[in-house]
Image 1 (cartoon, helix red, strand yellow):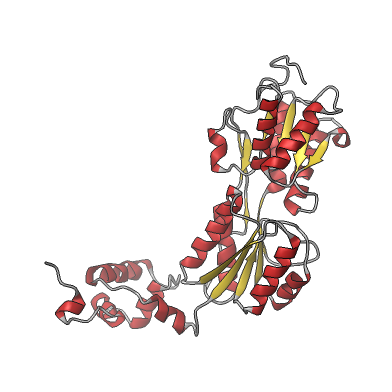
Image 2 (cartoon, rainbow, N blue to C red):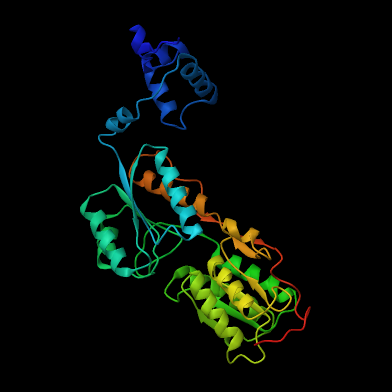
Length: 353
């Protein structure tokens, strides 16, 4: 029967034991444990080998106490039902967990009153900082007061009139690349299902679509646009309106500003008896995991939500003094992902209801 160190009376290995085994100072061991970039690679490997060999387990609480107290941050996101938001939130949480930082998660359901309430609550709790993903794009009084105090990081969405550090992806370039792909396949009757006009991401994506349309020699102002709210239901309603409504002839391609709305648009097409992509092509934005399993798999734009969340956490932890260096990047590229939901225009003749 194996005995624990406590049962045999032997004390647990200490940082001093590691330093002695690795033939370095206690400070060097501490620097390795705290992921300092100031430790030479050979020294780091030697210390890590000694930690493994003697079974030393760093005391995370002691590390936090050495900073004076346990650091804590707030995370404000619209909801976790949207897989993209969930990916960003998971990235934030993973980034903070590496430094033993406590987290308070607040879900706003893209409601301005909830955003204001949670900003007020987090401000009253005097957390070290906030990572803020707005679902409304609107500045609230409590957010303005948080911004005045500093240590707030925006991720994914900007909020007008509030100048704060921001972690983002190439929404405009990604949208332009996607629209260029649809245009390259011969589509000229294009309709756009956009996000809320208040949101920075919606504005950027719409601008990218319109730039591609104008570059193709078409009038972007003549392209129908119906605003949704990034939910599946809004994509469904918008697609029904565009495919059954006054557009004559109807669009051959629906460009949706996120994947959830594209999923809703696919449901609307099925309700109308339209086959995607032969009758109408459909695109999305975000590349959430489920869209490659759709029938047909969705052409979309991938953006690295998890990496953006980690970068936002890293930037905040740098600003509050937990980390010694900022993240390597705060602006991330997007990537066009071509799948089977887009076909060349005119590849099938259909009847619209």
